[in-house]
Length: 94
Image (cartoon, rainbow, N blue to C red; front, top):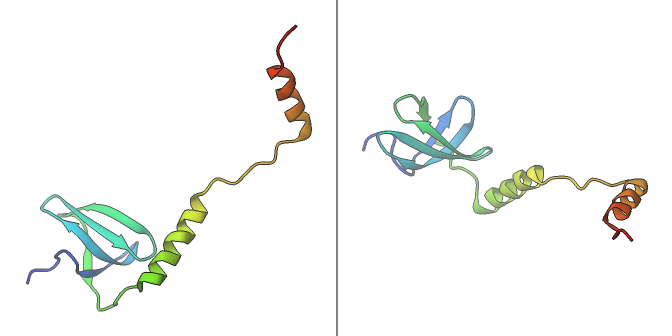
């Protein structure tokens, strides 16, 4: 069996360990344990085989939830004065 192939566990110098999810002569897609999915040019990506079994399903869900929380925009408190100005601007003119 040739290396790499779909489903292989690999190690990348920058992103760490991951699983190859898609592979063709042009692109290799790897789902990294800590960084999500990344797409590489097949002829240029440098990978090493790893014996790391990868995270369990529960660990993957937890990591995904953590990444999602980090990407959510924070709510910004609007000062009362700004709310009053907005309300006045939206009020119908008589």
